[in-house]
Length: 332
Image (cartoon, rainbow, N blue to C red):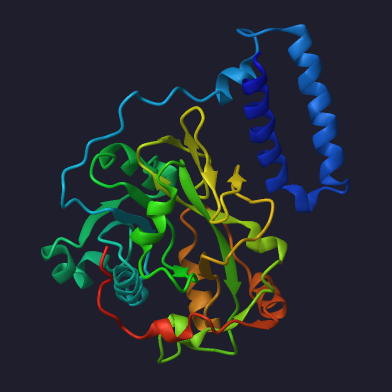
């Protein structure tokens, strides 16, 4: 087992443990140290082929040549799964178009009213590609688009309709401009900023960005979660969840400060250049609807979660409020 494959194995296992860390009663560092001892003993007992862990986590080498894309192709795309979110979808698309996203892949997970009915104009103009799919449990997953669209886009983000990418660097005017600083990396990992209901019992008349401003403290551990904007040249496989992906040997995701990020959670929170506003509950009524439709990942939400989010959202985050107004698409 090489030193590199051992490091990759350690990072992968550490990420797995850290996801469930809140349920552990011992310090994470203690667990990691014990894990390292186990892997070291395993390395001494077996040097390669019998080490299943290394075989599973060692990434393949990157292709010798980078993908050639034709001029005029869309630089940044977003892939999203939806279920009964028709009222939110157009606002979300128009906002991300305004910061330079040029293509949206909509996977409709059995909505009671198909989302396509409200998107015909956007489909006709080529901004949206729509596909009706079955539940995730039936084997249909959004990251399959990595295979279908690798040569169409340089970057693809995998986020949800309750998540908005917000550029915070005042010298950057679009998402493509920001991402051009990271073309040698596997992906850009963007930290969450979780927002609460902001006192709304029902859907407010204003936009999402302007209506919800109560948020978790920036350095709250929950904001260490990241979502990925992946560089299609260097990603070869989705991870276990939509928070992270697997990259070719020598490539990895970084945050906007250039720090490596492994797994679904970063070691810290960095939001100075870009942040992912996560409107996890929205209003009480909207959250109740969210509980009824369920999660594409099978996660169950409860009223206790709503109450906790309301309690934890003690800060006032207004940095994105003015972005709620409809804007013209950014120049890539």
